[in-house]
Image (tube, rainbow, N blue to C red; front, side):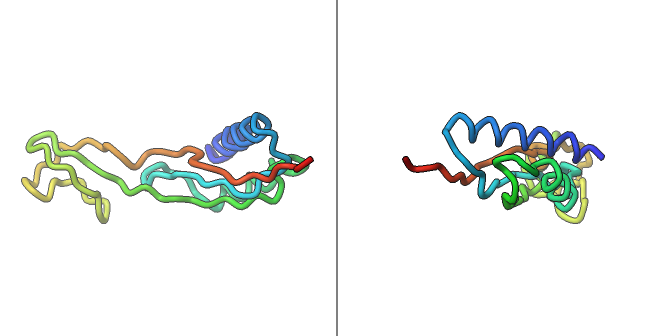
Length: 117
């Protein structure tokens, strides 16, 4: 259910930015989403469609750019991409790893339409 509050935040940010640049309509929103963020894109889209009714973002298309999970081994310093939920360093087999990328979720960019006078 955290998708609802996350989607509200994304929508509010998009509307604020659109207002600042004088946009009349938001056409596309590109979201960066970490593989470990726990966000379900389909839920975000569904909530976005409901929340954006009667706003400049109504009908906007959401694009999700998935950021892979990256880990760093605390023992040997090796940085590696997490695959198949494997939490062991491929270089030294240590299980002492930190997640350094993959939990993100943010508005990366958006395409807007402005009225030409």
